Image 1 (spheres, rainbow, N blue to C red):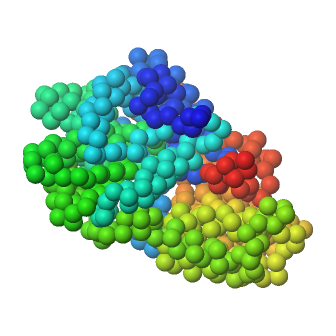
Image 2: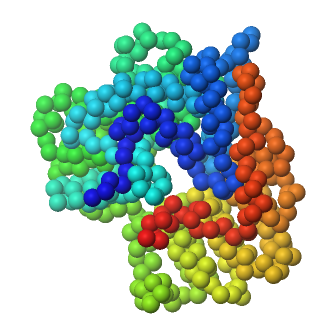
Image 3: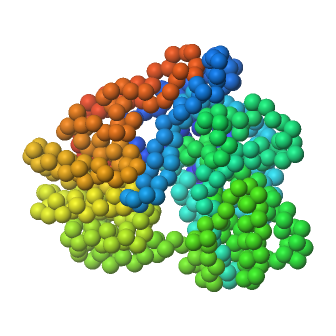
Length: 510
């Protein structure tokens, strides 16, 4: 069987750098296709090579280096619930990003060796090491399939062996990481304390984010690797603590970790609970804590292995259809478009921002794309869609794609298209931390009202050529205007294609 993916631990230094300098590794959140970071990453790599791949040598010889490297990144706050829960994302200044990649590259052999140490205990299995696709599918698709195969499916298989499962995760994992623990994980705590110098990975990360030692950015694969280094170190510490407890070490149990998501399997409740307490102590020493609301013990391993949203949507989805497949290989639905969407809206009230919600909207988009004419109730459909997008911002790309397909059916009525887009803008403008929504809303409005001003800096970049990243901390020329593909904008239609927003589209088309 052809291998579908390989982990970063299977890469040498050169392969690792190539992988991390891919635009899809640099920016892991979904943006419209006219944003292209390939050229700025190449520019940054060239600047670093001129300076011996050393970020410290790039920094200008000015009086206060710490001040001039303040606020150098683009930061986006993604609203998670339409209200006041949000997730910070960052596009690190490309020069600083490549500098961090080069620093990791120089330490890569040591890091890979440490991962061998982290994974020695066969009872503790990490299945979240970042992967690269080795076929025609995207890295992100293979990452999700890796989760499905090695966490969900493996957990279900454990129902043959174990009666109990505790499931938990870490609260605000990336935001809780103490950067000094990176060196502890790589070199050991005592050695790391003696190795205090500018060249370490944690010092590099601190310089990238205003000298902060608490938290690491999110939004790039390189920080997923950093998180895995620290969490792998936690696995090693947990293994040592368990082995110190001779009676516990003799017990039959398994632990699966997918990044900050833990599942502890055993045949005795007290064994799982004891392991959980030890894990809590290990994580507390690393400045991390469990999410108590998501920590639960269950005696049904299968139910605990599959996400609630997936179980619920499997039932709901089947009830929407009259026949499984027709002669055109398309699902037949007995509900109207509006009633179908109302079912999805009802589902998202219970499972906001879930993967099954996005899957449900992808199926709905298939129906919209097959529509031969504009539905009479298109305004009601748009209203429901906007409310889904507001409450579940993960659905923004697919939601805007569906809206674009409806607007395409209105292309003969440009006035109506403009009216609808303005209504949508008005509906969304007062949502706090709505930068991500603005970016995708601009993808709709850009062909109708090029002069509309959005507040997000990436949106402004389309017209104003403003600076996304602060670059006065080094002396070499850096042109960031190339992140906008003008040719793509000039040739694009209002319709957003499903392959632009659905990471599994290539699988479906096979």
